[in-house]
Amino acid sequence: MLIIGNITKKPVPIPDLNIVFKPGQVLNLHALRDAKKVKKSGDLLELLASGQLSHLNGKGLPTRAQADAGPPGPKEDPKEALLSDVRDVVKEELSKVGGGGANEELLKTLKGIQDAMAAGTVRETVIVEKQVSGGQAISTAEDDGIDDDVLVDIHTKTINKDRHDVEKSVEYSSQDTEADDVLENMLELDSMLGIGKKSSSDGK
Amino acid sequence: MSKAYGVDCGTMFFQVASQSEGKLNIQTTRNAFVELQESEDIDEVLRQNKWQYVKDEDKYYVIGEDSLRVAKMFPGKVELRRPLQGGVLNKGETKKLLIMNELIESAIGKAPTKDSVVCICVSSDSVDGSPDSTFHKARLQAMFKNLGWNVKVIDEGLAVVLSERPIAMEMTDDGVEVEAPFSGIGLSFGAGRSNCVLAYKGLQIVGMSCARAGDWVDEKVAEQTGTPISQVTSLKEKTLDFGNIDTDDDVQFALDAYYGAMIKYVFENFAHKFSEVKSQFESPLDVVIAGGTSMPKGFCSKVEAVLADMNLPFDIKSVRLSSDPRNSVVKGLLTQALLHSRNIKTEETKTEEVVAE
Image 1 (cartoon, rainbow over the protein chains, first blue to last red):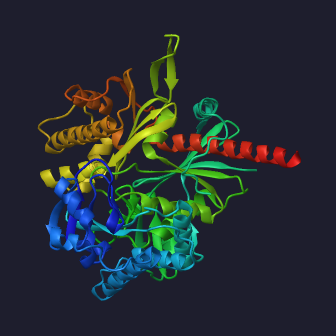
Image 2: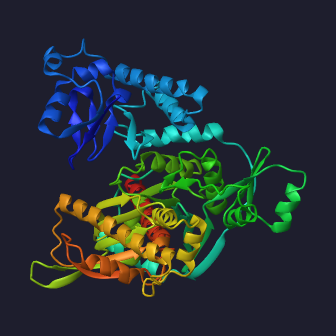
Image 3: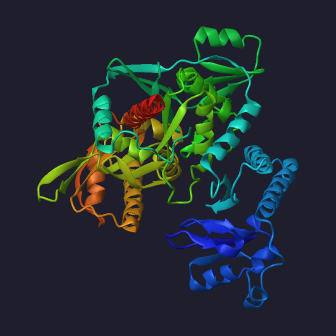
């Protein structure tokens, strides 16, 4: 375990590890990258020295001698390296099944990512990270470098795996009022923003 | 005919807004459930009580307000569960997708046309290490897309701005002061998360969220006074009045203190975010507030009192509580859904015209 935090208010990339810290983000680098690779990261060494990143806990920090020894072996195929990282996390999660600690949802999502990568639909790097917050491990699948539509497709596949017909009786409390303010606001916004404005958050 | 819905999948409530022929309809249910063990007479019990439920294989899940009734009836025997926690899908809840899917399908069903739109909201970037919305957002989008809807996603605080229409004043090139509507700070104090967005003419400039919200206040007050959390919540929802705090009552006194701490924390963090983007709002800003946690009497004055002691990087023109704080977010989402639906239709018309040419 090697816990590093970004103590600045700006995103901080570690180029030779292909990891980007969000402002204030804390990551266990050993959950993301091979410990040997981390130990040889010259960029991490520089960022720690400059104070942009901070060592919070754990062992395995790079040293000048190791970093100067050059890049850690031949350059890997980024897709292969990513696939390998995803496999490692899947393996780690699977190993927890016996102890009841496996996160089923993360596992399904990771498998979805693996499938999508194998099918070539993931174009760039995906970082599956473990954040530590308030003493509790939080696993999140970040969308760093992954197309939003692909991420939604992965989740759609996961949902459909579990989907089946159920019996139900669901009602809502219902309230009716005049819609004047909603419609007026919509028309005013429409005239201000202009028709045809497109947002990057569109889901379809 | 195409439809447009605003859907707020909140930690405490699941709400859907739609409009038809000038009428606004808001459907609400509590976003909670309890699991009941199968027994011979369970069907009869459900029917007799007219409880809402979802049956999956041999398990019954009583949902909505009825789940609270069942939980109160069998204290310690059934556990009240929530599909969402802290403003995002509850990581530790295995039945969250089952319940959410059924709530969504029951409320809006399948999209009637290809250009039908749903607008949902997520929390802005977290400033305090609480889980981010990436997974939550993608999973919700997938649920609605599965039913054929076009999905628009905005930040929760922006929904408040779109609903409450704060106004900033600005100078034209000719030196004339004019109104800039939908410009100001929108705040939503929910159960799981507080959200804050600065917008200019309906466009989000910066947003942030934090885990200090209604649930945090309840937990802290319960912890400090040794009062069961359900009693704290009940007192907060039914009798709390910031203009009339009984300082001899430990729960009221603690609620007042923790509400103050929550408001201060939210504005301190938002002030940092505001400074980061170096926004140039020279005129004072409207602050519009919504969300279930803002509903106790005197909340607005409480906010003003806290802000009076703070040194913020912007001036505040007014602090205003929504006239309908519980429904403000979902109304803002409907506004955005209608706008998006209109945009899709316009795009389609343009495409048809090009094809015709």
